[in-house]
Image (cartoon, rainbow, N blue to C red; front, side, top):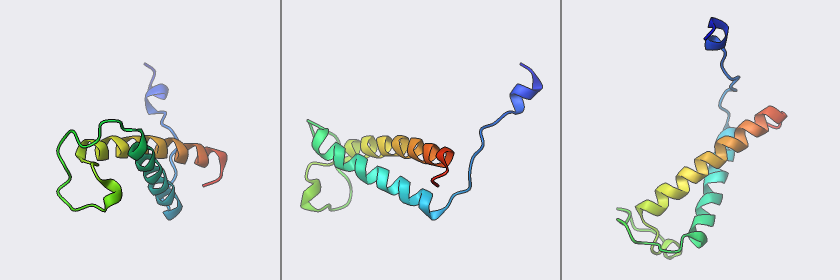
Length: 87
C-alpha cells in the first residue's frame, strides 16, 4: 500500500448537542420499532431496574438489540446529515 493511501482518513465533524439529539432520537425510534417488531420478548435475562408497564417483557437482549440498531441508524443519519450540510 502506498503511504498516501495509509494516511487518508474520513473527514469527521465535531460533536455538538444537535448530533447527540439525532442519536437519542434514532435510539428512541429503534426502541419503539423493537417494542412491536420483536416477536418473542422476555426470553432472556431481565433488566435490573423496574420499568414502566409499557416495557413489560422488555429484557436485556431486547435492549441491546434495539440500542445497537439505534446506534447504527444514528451513525448513518449523522454522517448523511453532516455530508449534506444539515448538521
